[in-house]
Amino acid sequence: MPKYLIEVPHEEEFVSCSHARQVFLETGSHFLTNADWGCKDGNHKAWLFAELDSKDQARAMLPPMYRTRAKIVQLNKFTIEEIDELHRYHRS
Image 1 (spheres, rainbow, N blue to C red):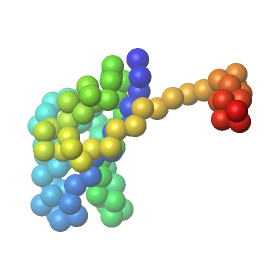
Image 2 (image 1 turned 135 degrees about the horizontal axis):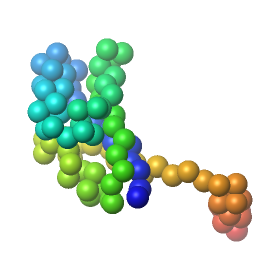
Image 3 (image 1 turned 90 degrees about the vertical axis):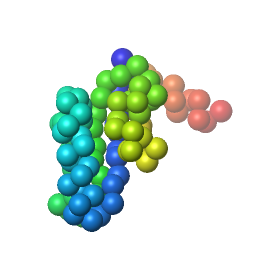
Image 4 (image 1 turned 180 degrees about the vertical axis):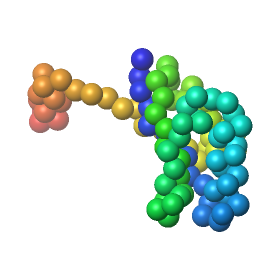
């Protein structure tokens, strides 16, 4: 199953930070309640990892107000052989 890194930004104001955390906690979703936050370091985003079937499924699990702003990246691990194959592909 694919693994995704989901980045959800919000505004810098205290009320926006507080509201974002509250909305995530109220969802009851294991993924959302375990998000990591960058607010204390001035980076007003939440990050979470999720193993889901698709990017669409990842976006759909987010609260509606954050779906359009979220950045969703499929993560991959590569074997040495796969890295060699990527090198050959990009050289041709």
